[in-house]
Amino acid sequence: MQGWIIPPPKEPAKSKEEFKKEREEKVRWLINQCFLTSNRIKDAMLKVPREEFVPPLYRDYAYLEVPLPLPGKKATISCPHSYPLFYEPLGLDKGHKFLEVGLGSGYGTALAREIVGYRGLVVSIEIDQLTFEFARKNLKNLGYADIILVRGDGGLGYPAMSPYDRICITAACIEIPPPLIEQLRTGGRLIAPVIEHGVQNLVLLEKSEKRIIRKVICEVLYIPLSGKYGGK
Ligand SMILES: C[S@@+](CC[C@H](N)C(=O)[O-])C[C@H]1O[C@@H](n2cnc3c(N)ncnc32)[C@H](O)[C@@H]1O
Image (cartoon, rainbow, N blue to C red; front, side, top):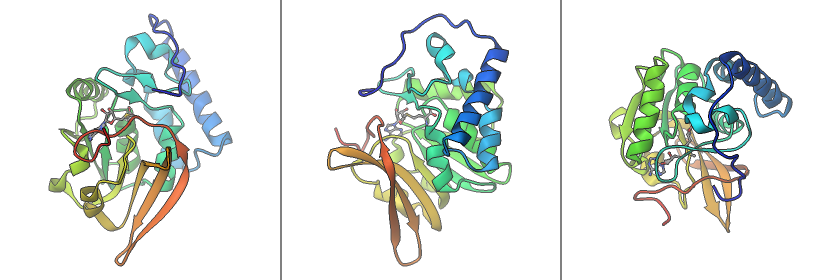
């Protein structure tokens, strides 16, 4: 988590009511800062209790704009603003079949499940066994029973459920893994942090019949993707 100052671990002390208030304040802030514009994403962020996806010793910091450590080798739960930052340009919406690479805590997965609704589908892949188990437990505790959770290398995608309407990679890649582009539906969109010229750019791809349209959204800072398409 180079580049971020992580607050020190401490026993959790905040009540459910305090977290709810912080969640509502965070959503207002995200709207004011123009990160959050669509109602479906707003409703999901108001509904999903982010604190339930944060390990106890960091739980009180759940709504701070910092990534927080998770069980596993390198995993973090991303800052709250990361989710609308990715999901708004992706245009994630009702009915979409969504693939997430990098399950982490399961928080982004739960938000996606709320956004796509019951006609949609969410598949999420995590490479680290400890992180995977942590997320699976978090999602189960909150009653998210119909998300397809896969333990493996997300760079390879999950062809069994492809093609996907939307794909989100939550770790920084050197190149966007070609299997993920193949598994994207024509007309679909993919978003990922990509390492270019020493910085990470958040890149949005739109796949049309004839070509891939590429747009850089902004600079970001994510942990590197591992696996077949990882850097080191
Ligand atoms: C920034 S974290 C994800 C945060 C997550 N979206 C959340 O809401 O907590 C990135 C995750 O990608 C995972 N990861 C890295 N390389 C991967 C790969 N090749 N396949 C699947 N997961 C990978 C890491 O273990 C880590 O859990």
